[in-house]
Amino acid sequence: MRCETMIPLGKVDPGLREPDTPLDIRTIAEGAAQIESLGYDGIAVEECKDDPYQQLALASVTTEQLDLATSVAMAFPRSPTITAMSAWTLQKASGGRLILGLGSQVRGHIRRRYGMEWTAPAPRMRDYILAMKAVWRCWQYQEPLRHDGDHYKLDLMVPLFDPGPIDHPDIPVHISAINTNMCGVVGEVADGIRLHPVCSPKFIEEVMVPAVERGAVRTQRNPKSIDWCMKPLVATAQDEISLETVAESVRARVGFYLSTPAYKAAFEVHGWGDQVDQAASLSREQRWDEIPALVDDEMFHTIATVGTYENIASLLSARFGSLIDRMEFSIPVNNADDASLLTSMLNELRETDSRRS
Image (tube, rainbow, N blue to C red; front, side):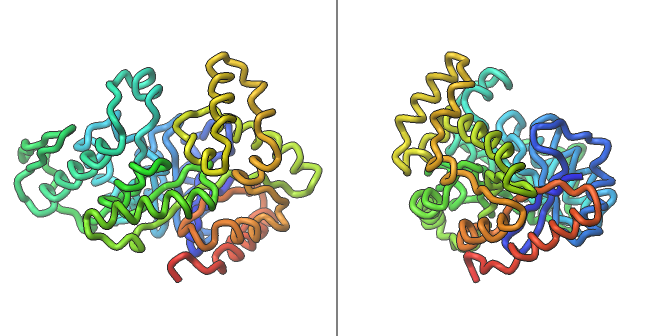
């Protein structure tokens, strides 16, 4: 089993799969129970090869305390009402443990994988969340469904499709964000922000935090109430020799992110805009093997946190401890010694002062 912890530098939410390998959905219930028995705070699942809501439904059956987070589920391919129902059902089944993390996805996937029209994601996400919350208010407080937004217009809810009130109606909504417009939407309407692994401390501090604060001002919200969550890009291994192999794999991952124009701002803040353009050009030509060469050591160690098991927790604490509330982090757990090692790492991360302490 692999534990991908989501530590609010004080909490832990493990996921349940090896990187770059398919998740066996049949093991989720068993894995979640094991994670809870080890004292973790929650699990986080992504939408890649299996439906995240079904994954968490399975995890909810064998657990009692774990937070259940989508990190993240795709918003736009589902209507706000469909997402509202999936979240409502999970929240009801789990006794109020859901954290609903939503992402917009990039233009190519919206058009070519989901077969949908592309629109500017930030204003659409704002409208999406407001529409979803209108559905929840309708169900919880029996008020008429009334949402008249630029993208979604909802005014029909009949008793047959109204699940009614639940015990824990306040579902935290997190948004995956990297660019300033979406950060602003987080500040306006969300409870948390899910950062992309490519975000460096410099980018978070100088670009993202001010953007979230500006959004919060627009709706008179307290930006300090927003949870900052991240799964950093980490290269770690038992020893230096093993780490070399892992590091090259992670360097290739940095190259993949470098080739994605949607993430350009995170590289541009460090003066690497030209490298983004070069990598994007190579990707269009399917010359993937040439992209990692664009990731020099300075870029690699700026974007990724690299270290052995002995020092990786302290490195992560030093880099993100003052910025992040919840952090996903993973090492393989195959036996009791691995579990003990992971626990010591998590305890070290938990001791880090959080951004709001």
